[in-house]
Image (cartoon, rainbow, N blue to C red; front, side):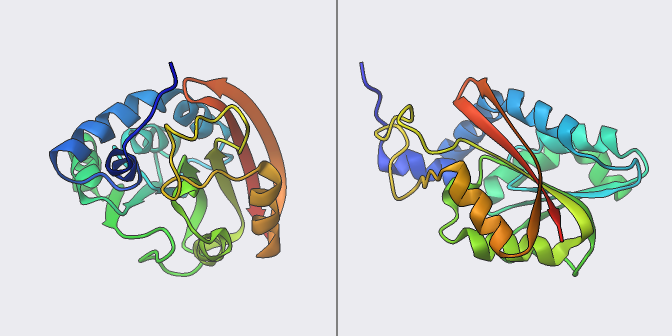
Length: 210
């Protein structure tokens, strides 16, 4: 039987709000755990790096990143205050020590200085961005020269259930489109891998700031 998802629930996937948003954020944490774990291993960072988790949601990935950078810092940003409240509980000690910080904001308008982070990780977020070049310019602004941007997303394909991931909440794009938008603002492709997880085929596109 074909699945369907009401539009109001789909919008919660983009920016969880209220009690329902809290529940959905918890579910998303479980559904995407596998690709988040792989993504953390694909970051090429030193142990004193500053890493941005863009669209951090539940914050679980930030705990993994903190282990990768024992002498560094991890910054999490998300547009959902509900998601960040979950992340704050998860990251309690790291927040108190100053090794982790959280910001409630859109990814296209980061409250960060230019060239202030060594790497950016963003997992299953590009669907909710209307103009990818605007997002990539902002990522380029805060990345240090040569810094890594790792994009994790489901590429557009016939396997995606459009009733379960309705437009305009979800904008699925092909790898070629995402890559072209990134290269157009000055990123250089570093590597690209694909694997299958609970959500389906997932692309791991690694880029460097030129």
